[in-house]
Image 1 (tube, rainbow, N blue to C red):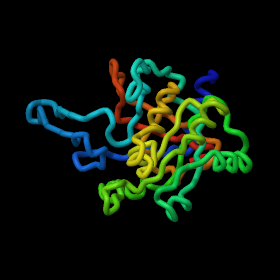
Image 2 (image 1 turned 90 degrees about the vertical axis):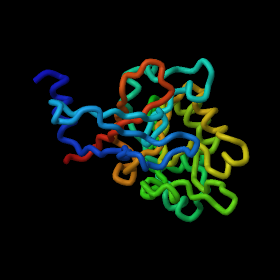
Image 3 (image 1 turned 180 degrees about the horizontal axis):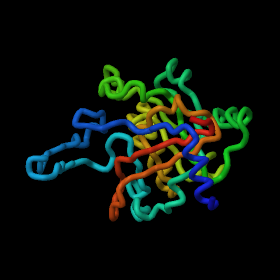
Image 4 (image 1 turned 60 degrees about the vertical axis):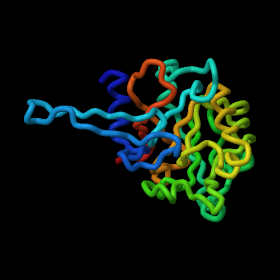
Length: 246
């Protein structure tokens, strides 16, 4: 058996987890964006079944390229293929988020994680598990607005992102919410953490699912999407390959 076939055989024997939500016309989304539209163009009575989908790039579980926020940033098609299959680290702060919906993951959270699981390797993908995805597909629960229409949702702190990017040289981050920033932070200062992240030429995957089914360390993450020309983002199919056998 060739080397690649041996790797394939090993990967196929492992447990795979879908980290993407199914999307439709009613899926939660950033409120300024239009909902997905699906139209049947041909049916099987015509000899073949064809559907037309109209959807913005930042919809459902999706990948953001740096140019989504940053002038001159990379498009999706500029992201290297090898940067779409990465070691996956999952930092679980779901209990903290349950107690405080405004929770922001900190540098100390990452250091505590490393004290237990080892240092995060360079060129990895780090996911913030909040269990917010369990609110899907309830739009109201995903946004979690207060009486002043502020989203009470968790997010990344600047110090955590700076540490991961500058000290650990990661390739990408991901989270279960609609935004990188916590809702309270975004209402006060705008999406400054998302801008910072993308400005560092790092891509992100938003609205992840099923992180509670993935161990803290030892998995791989695969991010796939259509081969768009000059796209700022795209709905994505994201898969985790776990270290355990199926």
